[in-house]
Amino acid sequence: MKTDLDSERDYSQQIAQTIRDAIISGDLPVDGRLPSESDLATRFNVSRPTVREALKRLAAQNLIRTRRGATGGAFVNRLSFAQAQEHMVTTATLLLSMNAVDFETAVEARFALERACVPLACMRRTPAHLAGLRAEIARQGTDGLSDEDFCASDVAFHRALVDAAGNPVLSWHLAGAVEAMQPLMNMITFTARSRARIIALHEGLTHALDAGETPPALAALDALAAYTLELGSEIRARRGARR
Image (cartoon, rainbow, N blue to C red; front, side):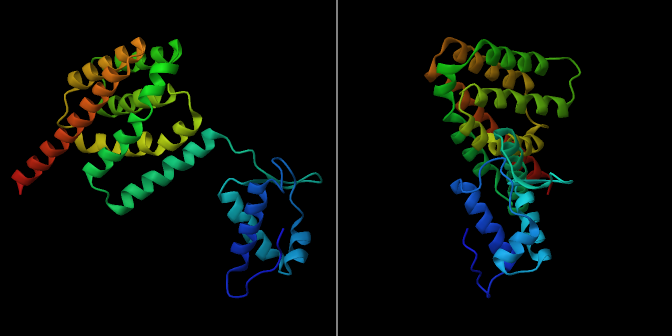
């Protein structure tokens, strides 16, 4: 690892970046133990608190884990796609809530990304994927289902669609689109939407996936996108009329 530090920049940040680079390059292998705090402090010619701060940065990124005791220390994490998806959802939710992304932009991005999964889902969907989609459709038609639970089922349906593509990298990338953007869309549109219409569109999409027919599946997804935009316009008009 490079141990020369720039005196004009934060030392802990530079140390964290150096260790991160070593993890990515494989110089520090997964599950491997990092040098001790005192050893790192000597190598970088800094204090142990500075090293400790660098390790905290790495732990916050889920790149390392720490263990106490005689066999303890800091170890390189084996990051899973599930953990990465959780981080993606949190980041996407914060970005959307803090940067006032307009409704149409969010809809455009989410459905463009989800659309990429449809051809793969038509080829790779399994009986388990189809059963999951149908279970959510059945749940959505339950009498007395709350708006909150309908929204949760809507998210679960589209999560299952993405996962049916059978590509963990796509599932990771779309975690923010489906599990961050979609709940925000639901919060805006739930007072105006027709559950029956959404269920019908979900049924059409599932039928096309079951048949392995990409064009009808894409058409159903495009219809969902168009209906979502229609709902957004209706809500905006209602708000404008009340002013």
